[in-house]
Image 1: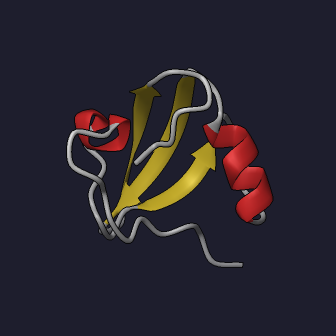
Image 2: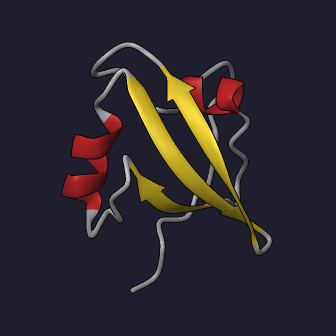
Length: 73
């Protein structure tokens, strides 16, 4: 199973403000590995989305703050 890949980041979105970039891979969201788009959307629906991100082999934590139900961007 491949990890979810960030393909684009919308300008002035919660994801951009948190520092996500195209090419980042989402290792976990809220401590869980999203298995499909349905689980991804469920996990991304929270006000605080805790991510473990892999960027070029380096893993780090990112917290995205947003309104509940707002897209990550």
